[in-house]
Each structure stands twice: as C-alpha cells, then as structure tokens.
Amino acid sequence: MPAIMLIHDNRLKELARQVLAIEAEAVTRLAARIDDRFVRACRLMLDCLGRIVVLGIGKSGHIGGKIAATLASTGTPAFFVHPAEANHGDMGMITAQDVVVALSNSGETDEILTLLPLIKRLGVPLIALTGNAGSTLGKAADVHIDVSVPQEACPLGLAPTSSTTATLAMGDALAVALLEARGFTAEDFARSHPGGRLGRRLLLLIDDVMHVGDQMPRSAPDDLLKEALLEMSRKGLGTTVVVDRDERARARGVDEGNPVRGADREGAGDVRNGDSGLRGAPQALLAVLRVGERRVHCEDERTEARDKEEPAHCHRSDGAAPCP
Image 1: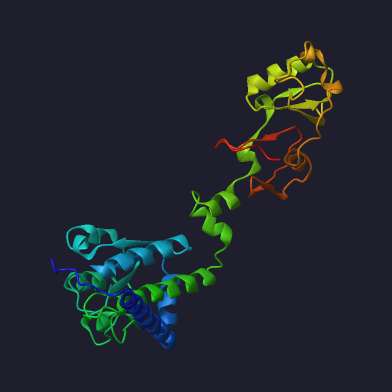
Image 2 (image 1 turned 45 degrees about the vertical axis):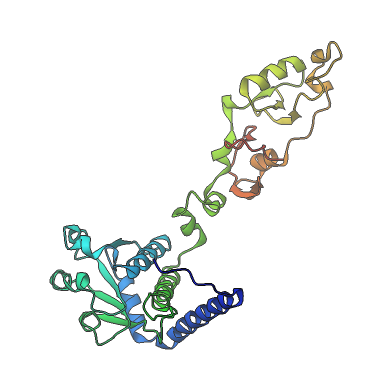
C-alpha cells in the first residue's frame, strides 16, 4: 500500500474539477455520433420479441447492469448477463428472440469474444458499444456505436472513468429514445416502481386505504354518545360517521367523541349524537361519496377515488393520520 501523500485542499478541488471537465467533454462529444447507426440500434431493440441482453465485464459490467436496469424500468424488457458466467452455462439465458448489447471499451474482451460464435449461431442481432470500431467486437457487431473518449479522467490513464461515463450516457440515450418511441408514460413507470413514492402516488387507490361496509364505524343521530364511543373503539378508527337510518345511509357528519373522551362531567356520554355538535363530513369522505373517478389528495399523495354509495373512511395502514 503506497504511503498517503500530503496534498493541499486546493489541489484536491483542482483534481475534482479536472475530472468533471474531462468527463463532461467525453459525454458532449457523443452528440456528434448520434447517426443512422444509433437509429438502427433503436429499431433492432424496438423490433425485439424477446429481451435485451446486456453483456460486459469489469467496470463495463457494472455499467451494463445499470443500462439493463434502466431499459427494463422504462418499457424495454432487459437483463444483464455476466460474460464469464455465460461461458459456463448462462449462455442458455439468451434465446433467438433476443437482442444482445455488448460493452467493451477495447472491443477485445476475451470473455465476450468467446461468445461471438454462439451469438451468431443463434442469429441474434448484436449491438456493440466500444471505443474501437476496428476491434474484433466492433467488426462482428450488426451495429457498432462509437463511445470512444479522448482520455480517461484518471491521471494515470488507466482506471476506466471517462470511458465508462460515456458508455453509461449512451445507454441512457438509447433507453430514453426507446421510451419515447414506445409511448411510455408516468403511469407505466409507476407500475415498474410500485414500492417508490411515485408508484404509491400514481397506483394507490382510495379503495386501497379506505374502510367500508362492516369495517366502517357508524351510528345514528339518536344514538347516545357512549354508544358511539363503543362503536369507535370496536372499529379502531377513532371516529364514527353519523348516518341516517334509511337505505341510502346518507352521511350527516362525523363524531370524534371529543366532548366525552377525557371529559370529567358526569353523564357526558348520555348526550345524543344529534345534540353533540357534529363536525361536517371530512373532505376525503365527501370526495369518495361524490366525485367518482376524480383524483383527490390524501396525505400529500394523489390517489384515485371510485364511486361509493356508502360512507367510507380513508385510513393509512402505515399509521399516519386519516385524510383531513
């Protein structure tokens, strides 16, 4: 392990700025290489009946994994295969319906070159992203996309830095172009990200978080408040909807038991619902009852309301407060 050199703070800042400038130039140069070959690569991927299989090893392998993940999450089914594993059985993951995207800065990666005869035998289209169009991989590809860089940001010129950044940027360019071509929407994106905030905002329905039917605490205007409190406790929502005793069960308001809970005056629980000063039905309740498919706000997340002909209470399963 080499000894750590003493280096001035300003030198650290200077090195960082140099790296960013070098990598920014490498990415900027890619714009001039977006030509008919890029378009053909997009067409091959759009016409693919199987999956996009991304190959790469070393740092290119890490970049390949990210490109495959970006493609998959933006409407183009894709996965990453490690070339070394492909040489020992995982080649069976690639079918004749797929398209292969191979990453190699030199274009001479042994583990990928070994797979070329098998890829050709399958008749699978091969797209190569390399820094050397004259390389073995570049010549074997059906489409070669040039991701060469003038220099690595590494001062030794050895560690893949600018080259991997350029490859990643070109992968993003492919993914976004395909996204647009497929008419991919925010709702489509949410379906592949159900666990994130976007997924919850776009996919969660009021139906998913509301209590209805027997789950919904309800009482009549002439019920005693102590009876309403028992109903609140049974259903565990801290409130009850006061409804008329007709077939429609029209909501009259919401009783939260505030005059009784913690009250020290004797007989407070013998007051009737209709005499307790009901609070108007909450906004979320009215939305469920009236607006049909309209989107409403619930705990800062947009959810979808469906037609309901009975009172409903929006209650977050994560313990957050109900809709205001």
